[in-house]
Length: 220
Length: 220
DNA sequence: ATAAAAATTTAGACTCACCTAAATTTTTAT
DNA sequence: ATAAAAATTTAGGTGAGTCTAAATTTTTAT
Ligand SMILES: [Mn+2]
Ligand SMILES: [Mn+2]
Ligand SMILES: [Mn+2]
Ligand SMILES: [Mn+2]
View 1 (tube, rainbow over the protein chains, first blue to last red):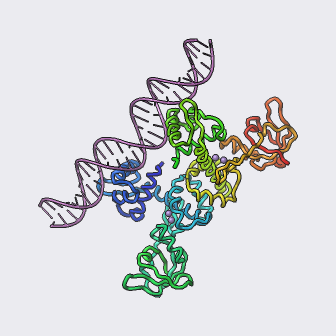
View 2: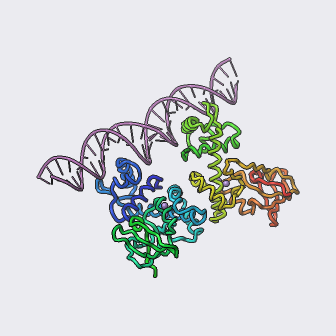
View 3: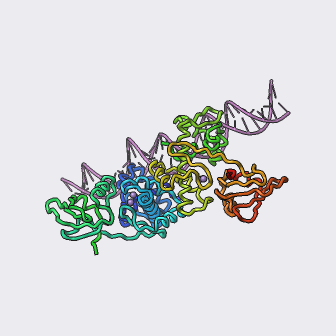
């Protein structure tokens, strides 16, 4: 029903709106889609026509219930394929995103539900992002940022909020992957950089910029 | 490089030409692509421009070496995904073709080679069709047709030359799937229908039309 | 050999998803 | 409150891939 381009817009609106909460601006969409604002306007008119978004000229755009449903389906497919590529095909977590951008548009529901079962119904993807259910619910995964943890605390790494391959490669090298147990040894007041103990290994430094993009939960 | 539509044309030209041997007519392509002859002409001009086909007006079309390479890549992807869906996801062999028609256009070579390894380098797909190698060679699989077997002989079912879901479902019900051992008990002179023994089960009849589309090899 | 039929190509349009340039509306700063 | 700046939309195009209708070429039949 929704074309490949339409699916990409809906998914992007979902992400940029903070899971559908706020309005998204034309320019924000243009920047992320690598297109021009005029092209975005054209698409928004079409999506509104199809009742996939609420759109009033100059007022930004929000997903309708129907639009959100499509967006969550696309996100579900994307994340399940990422799990498949990492767990079954042996890809690294920094390699799978561009391929999942293509696979997410294969529409067969039968295919995706069988894939889900084959993967044992994973609840999150290799980056720690939650996988929407077949029924179209996004599991809420509310994590803290590592940069907000105080010295002396021990936490578990749960995911990332930045998906650039170079960032992910840096984390792998430091042993910082979902599941890693991290103790904050020291925090440098000056630049907010952190000295960490990661899974029994020797201490590592991470900058505030890195810590800001690492999602954690406090160990019980 | 080649668009989705172009890939579909190249694959189709390969099949209709008998693996690249003969010229293919505009009308034959129009019929199979569910488009009009005029649209096919447009596309052939474009493919010729890109050096993917040899094309002279009114003379039909043939793949270039480069075009054949693309066609074989697409066929490789199609068949590997079919194996994946049947062997790993539990699809039936009559369900996978339409989904593979979409998956075959995911271009990542890394993905397809890892999938190949994950599947243990299968040499044929669920329908018995050979899978082109990563190097772009189509393994030759020269089988006889069941309709040409004489009474009293025992053969092994290797594949089908007709892929309609209804035909495949009929075969499954009769227990006629690749690997089945088949003995020809009787052949009816009048309509060339056959009485078969399939894998130790009681005898079954198949029409000439069915036997003509079953590929076999003689048991050693 | 010629005329009719069939196959194919050309001409002119259409939709989708994008573009640039120009207008318009909204926001921000004075 | 007004002018400048920023954001957004409108106007008019483009290329890919398709269409219908008309013209052309090839094939078939007499
Ligand atoms: Mn991703
Ligand atoms: Mn992810
Ligand atoms: Mn198939
Ligand atoms: Mn097949």
